[in-house]
Image 1 (cartoon, one colour):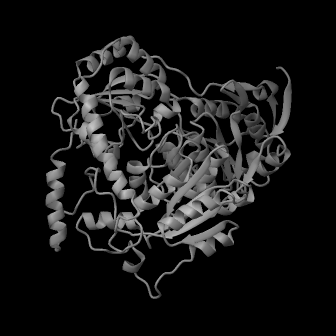
Image 2: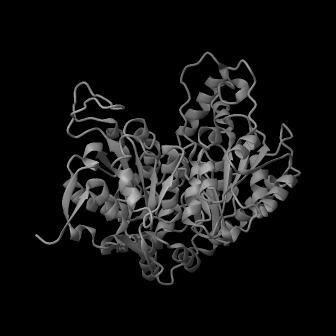
Image 3: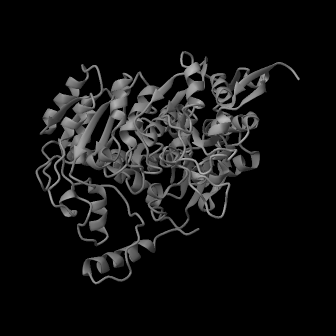
Length: 620
């Protein structure tokens, strides 16, 4: 039988996590960077005691909101390129459900997080326990079942020995490039405290490989090489898989050797230095005019590590060439075969290397690189115009683009990370931010989750303490979730928050107007109110322990950013901005359904435009 160790189930979970390792750049380190915990009656006695016993060797971080701490864990994994990750534990009921949104973020973005919510009593003696959700027709259901659709692997632990198989399976999912995503092990609260004689071998140190280099099938590789050689106007669309594969150097080398322009998705931005002549920036709905001009006419899209989200493809209306073919190099077959693409199932780095070897001296026609240079020059002139402090908006307040320009001029681009998630800023940042080094651009735009920004900035800083993390957030997202700003101060993780106050949900207000709708319920002044809203964001941030300042101009913003470098803790810089002005150059249609019938002429006209645009969609 071998040596046994008697532990509670919770103690065994913690001891197991402590002994899981990985190797990054030749250095062995724990693969779990610690555990976020908010304790309640569903986990304080079990997981709480177990984490206390390990506190000197396995850090536990206290947060202010369960969703917030889970966002921090998600951002940590993303900023680590999925090579390390964290765990999160909560009570049952509302504590557990608060993490479900963040689990959705992790699932959509293919990011590893281990969720350990408390659950009801397995023995059901106190049934129904406080905070228990009762299903009238199924006695096995609890609140934690809500994690099932947003988990890559789910298990409910009703006996202490079940974690032996469950944790091993969890690690396989968390470290597998194709299956990667959140894992939920729902821990029944009585079982957390139950003891079991675990085999000592279960706790032996294990080193996990997170960058498994899957090689392509030879027939798929040959077909991919033939597709590329036959193309006259190919374009690469680089996704997050390039970054997770640590394949930026190979991507750049491939583009240079074969003369193929590179566009990037939200997740893929920073996969190539945008100062490179063949780097055309963002593509699709929030794309640059340069990238979209090449994509509209291309005859081959070479997707690398992208899941072809609708913002990337202009809701599949962007690619107008009737002879278009799609090649999808992806580690996940689920993504590799989308929209009748020819799949090349492989690791991005190894796939690029073998493709380049197979192509030999083949190079795209020189006219393609020449056109790329021409359209990029035009686009950069647009950027200069939008960045200029002299550009006039309708209200006279600075635009999002002008704020982005000020931030980009004020930070060391090589050693800074800009982070954002939802609203109008992601579109402007995708177009305008001059990404240079891999990971310097961190956007959660798979789930477009408002409230990710501040908590995500904290997690990213924990993953990359060497980087200056600059969080850009609108007032709408800040109001949804800001409590982890206090956590960043408490645990000494300095982030810089640039808070753009346009008095409401400016992005959706513009979308409302674009689909013929009246200004309604988005901007604060267009919403039901008895007293006009006025929120002193500077005072609020200061009350949570941050250094805070409000500025009134772009020049003052740049001064404040420079001054913030000397601050010893998280800093918030507030600036009022125009809610309507966006970068008109670039961009593409996005499929947002407009009502077929309306008493308002504006909506009927918008419907006509919608139907005309929808005719260009590829349905294959």
